[in-house]
Structure formats: C-alpha cells, structure tokens
Length: 215
Image (cartoon, rainbow, N blue to C red):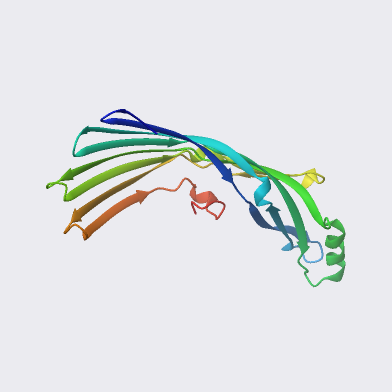
C-alpha cells in the first residue's frame, strides 16, 4: 500500500489460491426388463488440495476528501484453477441379477483420471462512509459486483473414458449486492450497530443447486 496524498491511498497485492474439488453425481440407465429409469451407479470425483492452485491479483483505492467522509474502491481478479481428479464408480444394485451383471460389466473399475477447470469470479466493491455528531455516528453504504459469467459451464473430461465426459451448462449471471450500516458510539467502549444487505444470486432458477458456495 502507498499513501500518494494525505487524502489518497492505493494498494495492490497478489492472490495465491489453493483449492480442492469434490463432485458427486448419480448415473442412470433404463432397465430393459422393466423399462424403469434407475440410478445404477454413484460417481465421486476428488482432487488433491496441494496439486491445484491459481494466481490472481487485487487492487484498492481510498479517498478521504474531508475529515468525516471516506470513499473506497477495490477489485479482485478472477482466478482460474485446473484440477486433476480421480473418479470412482460405485454400483447401485437394482435387484435384477441379469441387469446388475450388465451394469457391472460396463462400469469402469478403480480410480479413473479426469480433469476440470473452474474460474473463480472477479469482484469489485465500492463504498462510502460518513461520520457525524463529533464522530459518534457512522453511516456507511457499499455495493459489490460479482462476475459469475465466468462460470458458464462445468466440463469434466475423463482421460481414458472420453465418452463419459460431463458438459454442464450453468449460464450464471453477473450480479450486484447492496449493503448499508449504521454505528452509534454510546460510550468509548460501547457501540450499537445495525445493518441491511440485499444479495442477489447469480444462479438461474433452472440451475439451482449446490455447485458453489453461492448456494
């Protein structure tokens, strides 16, 4: 960080992110003996935390034109991480021996290598705070923007089994969140605070699910 002027400061930094992914889904098939659509297997994909990382950056600015008024702005870049996964298929039996045998013969055994990539979204924040009543009262407001369009798809490629690859369309949208707060210092050691925020999700209704922490 650096103070350019008494009223203006800037800051910048690097972001190193370690990340782990665990994805699970059921695999379905039609039982030809009953024409029923059944879950015949469970697929679990895992990555190693220490082998999956990415770099990004952030920057910020703080401007204080007068003693009781402060403006701030910050930006954090998106971070792309490429994951090496292992996929394990576990059969779910139907009770029909012939059908279960056919499913067992078609399922890959052991740990199967796979890859995926995720771009964690960029974000920007802008806010202001004003102090009143001899700095006993502080009122603040902030707006946060998140670039969820970086998460348009989730693609998983099975290295040795390309036919089992997953292409999941997310179609997420960029969104804004709005926050406001107030603090009143009753004494030097006691303060009363209240706040409100309105936070929209980037997930469309047709894609609601626990893919990321936004859910």
